[in-house]
Picture 1 (cartoon, rainbow, N blue to C red):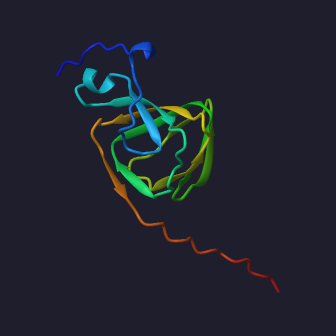
Picture 2: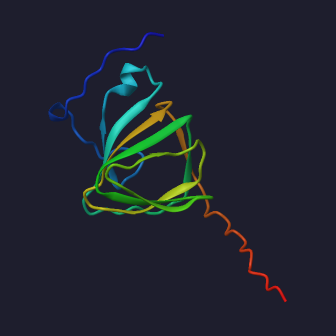
Picture 3: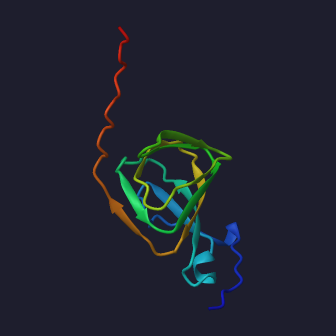
Length: 139
């Protein structure tokens, strides 16, 4: 299957409110069409007046990474904890990792790349709390 050449200029592209999360706007970078659905890439930015709902979820995909262009966001990952991403941060989310977004700045902008372009997102319950290994006293 041959893929195509693609160029996406900011001046000719628009952000749309339709996308995976209602609190973000998305600008498609043309990669889905050029790769015939193998990969999707888009710029994501925070929608004014909206906030993340903090719903735990996972994505059924092979690859997902994000590069933060502007602003910051706090995510929580099962087995990792809370992580603050800021401008210049690149993060890779392993396939199927349970996560959620806690909050973000009003000026947040990120580039996200996912393969394949069509993937399923599954809403999940909050993960079970890890049992704490209390300190043992040596007597």
